[in-house]
Image (cartoon, rainbow over all chains, first blue to last red):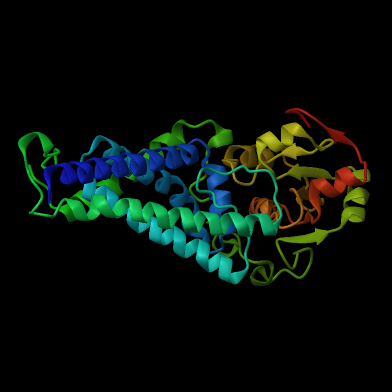
Length: 164
Length: 175
């Protein structure tokens, strides 16, 4: 591997990390400002027991913000990316199940309170959200797999603070 | 100190809970979610009518659904109406005289104040939201039943139906 191609790879990994982190910072933040709205969306999925709706609606956005923030600043990157990848898999699963069951839901991904929409519009948005989440999963891959590659050059300035 | 990856993940997961608790506490009532917003089951807090063993005025369900005509009759009979939608939607327009009780916001204090008013628990009250697949009125109906209201009526088609019938509507934060 030439030095320049490895530099590009590193740059790409940093860009992917910051993009993914920034997106989750935004997604979490937009839900934190209105927990009742998000709880409502979550309940519409009809996947969670009633008791779990409110605690998850309150804690999940903070988890997104925490992991997103850690990814952006580059601390505990792999752990944060792993949690976010896990969340993305759950989101894809939840959307797919409701799509298969024919339950139209508002994604709720970026907060609640959307104007009323038709079931067809909702189904289209759900498919779009699944595609977007899969893309984000791909974006998480370099963060997840890059750090445990011993063959990568480890010059002092290129080592990110993984030991914090 | 070096933490193992598993304990780092556990730490991140654990941190989200106190943050959620603190931010929810600091939020205004309209943006605050009751931790048990949807958790209270009727059986746990108040025995179901059948279990109470009362044949008399005990309703068969926490609420019964009514149509637009039923809502108009109760409106003319001066029944109390409760709007289960979000505060913002209530301000944009609600059934004249209806009180705001947003099912998803933290309304524990409002419910307590309502019970303290000492209203007749057997008098019918009407709850509504935005009709269609909106279930906020059913959620609020259950909360009202748990608070002691025996005759809760859910206006199935809700506010859109009321507007379509060109019936009295008010705007702003007051009933």
